[in-house]
Image (cartoon, rainbow, N blue to C red; front, side, top):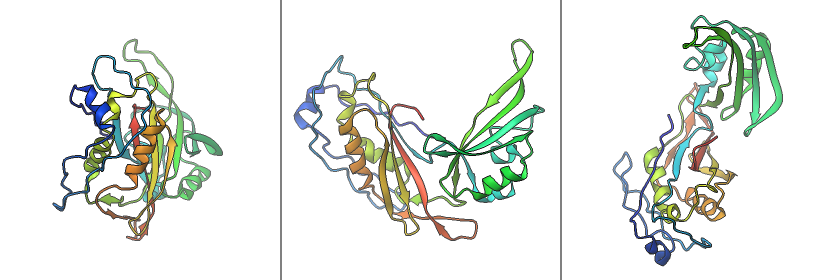
Length: 269
């Protein structure tokens, strides 16, 4: 579901040296037709710049929940089997499930909060754990099941490990639109594709919360892209995102906080 945005710049690398930063961006149009704020030019200390062949490095941008697979609290409340939790990932296709564990994550790391069961049917402890999770919580399912090799026709045990984020029943929405927000950051970091090295670029992530009032808060760098100047510039842009936020709501229509992750750099978890 995550959309990768790549971009190219004029082949005159010397232009980046002379401008040292972003010269602004074309105006983008949000859903209501109101022009969004432009990404302002900013001086950047980029250090030593090495140009190989004048071709910009591909930088990926994305905005989504922490993991691609998501589930709502209402779905967790009514889940009776592991397939109910991630039906698009673990399907009822005749496979025989053995051990199935559900483990809560702290960021990207496993915690000691885990419940283990046998087979696809959730036991009471597993159901209680899933129902205790709040919005923006993350967990991993590790399900051992039988699978058939299409080439050989032999059957053996396989391990599925879907990572899941709990999201509100109605997720928070920005009036400018997701694509416009990514384009805003892309334009605001337009000098960097000529500067970063593919061997050093990593998967950067900035986490932020859209609270019940529609305000962006708790903006923090949770993973560096390997370039402090790029990290700092994206952090700056995340605090000046265009558009306004309609907060998330739960199954009762009550406003709730929701956490998002803005990824930049390379593709990765």
